Every structure is written in structure tokens, then in C-alpha cells.
Image 1: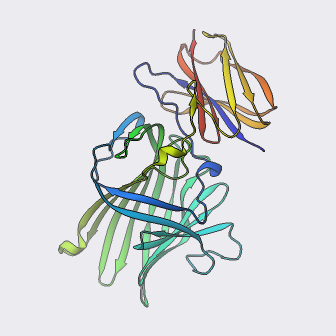
Image 2 (image 1 turned 180 degrees about the vertical axis):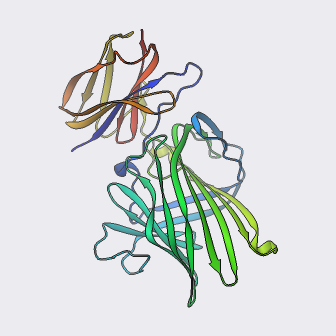
Image 3 (image 1 turned 135 degrees about the horizontal axis):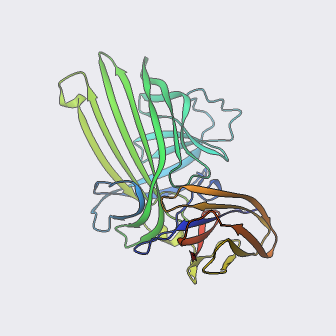
Length: 348
């Protein structure tokens, strides 16, 4: 079985360090037939983006439940989707209040629109909700061009969107679970929507928090700011909601000596430590796989790409030329299908 690796160096923060998570198709792609039992909780401000964030929702009051059910869409026409040629198009029932439509490929998660009662929103081209893989500081943006249909009335939607992995850190939730290495993905949509004689200017922001080894976000928050060209309260309002996934910590792989154990067991070693001109990485793997080797700085930016390596079963010794890396403390990280392994090292 082929596995995908990413080996990286991170600048080490002595005060607080969480090796960054990465979203992948294999670990995080939506599956038809999955059902998630979410809990709505009290909303709280999401804070700034950046590295080593601490998000504490442990004291948030639980309000009510919401079930998300994902079925394969084979009949509902949405946007310009050709139902006969798409890989996977899911109709996602979100608590019975609305159905959202996502196309899943090996490379992207694409949002085509939604339906709720007599209302239907659909786009000429999908919003790229996220790409696979997606890592900290990756950004996707594009135009929103579509229609808002109510009964027989069709009105235009125009605007833009940005999806970015804007933060990573630790997250505490009301069920007592605490996750490190959580990656936050922020989707912001700014658009105008015509409804009858009114034009609405809308900004929606959705934050999804992804924990290592868990397929779906362990926390989702939604902010919706609506303004219209009327002075009525019904046309100008803000809503804020939050949902979390109880018991998701049961999906996280157990830890042995600080390393996550995935289906393809991986052990890493680095030498010499401290290092100077070169750093040697030994990767022991149970099954042959591909490996991408990178260097990432404190802000999560890739500063050097060593290319892709084919790893054989057993020990693999890889020499990394590090003469151009400035002295300091770093972390060597190996990520196996989104599960991370790390070692602290020092560059003299």
C-alpha cells in the first residue's frame, strides 16, 4: 500500500510547540454514508490566526444536538455539475435544516451550493473549500458567481471567497478532550445577493478545526453578517453559532514514545544532534512509500524543498543538506497520512 510522507523541519519555540497538522484526501476526504452527531455549544470569539494558538471551549455550554448525514447525490442538479461524470458528489443533510452539495476529488473539496425548502443557491463554478493536502498558511481564493432561487424567482449572487489554513495550536472541548496539532481552516465569503427589491451584502466566516487522525472537524463555528439597503432589523443582523464533535478523541491513534502509530508504523531518528552542514534522517517504515522532504520555519512557511523520495520497507537513511539554514533550535517532523512524528534538533 502506498503511503505519502512529509518530512519537515520547524523552528523550535522553547515556550510552546505543537507540530503542525496537515489535511489530506485519505484522512480527511468526505465519505458517502457517514453520519456525525454534533453538539451545538455557546459561541465564543475565535481569536487571531497564527502559530501556537490556544483555543479553550471546555466551559462552553451544550445547547442542542445536530446530525450531519452524507449521502451520494445522484439526482439533484446543482450549478453546472454533470452528474454522470463527477467522481463523488455528496448531498450533506445538516440537521434537516438544509442540504449542502460537495464534490470530492483526490485534489479538492468543492462546494456547489445548497437547498433549503423552496430556496436553492447554486454556483456557476464551485467554491474550492479546501485542497488536498492543505497545510498551515495555504490560501485558496476565487470568484462567487451564482443564483438564489425562491420558487420560480431567480436572482443573482456575485462576490468572492478565500479559504486559508490560518492557524494551528491546541484545542480544548466540553467533553474533556484536548487536542494538540490542530489545524484551523477559515473560509470567508463576501458577496451581494438580490432578493426582490432589496440587495443584501453578506459576509460569512466559517472556522473548521482539524485534529490529527480525525476525519472530520472536531469544532465548526459560523459567523454570518447581513446588511441590506433597508432600515429593517430583518434585513440587517448578525448570527454566531458553534458545533463540536463529542468523542472524536477515540479516533486519534495511540501514542508511543511521543510518536503516533498509524497503519504504516513509522519510526524516525536524526543525527548528529547538534548538526552543522548536514542532517541525517533515518526513517524506518513497515511498508514501502513515497516521502516529501521539506524545511518549514517558525511561521510554518516552507523555506526549502528537498524533493520526493521513494522509501523501501525497513530503514531508510536520508542526508539533508542544511548549510543554508541559520543556527537555532528546530524540529524534524515526519507526517504519515496526516499523522505526525517529530524529533527536536539543534543547528550550530
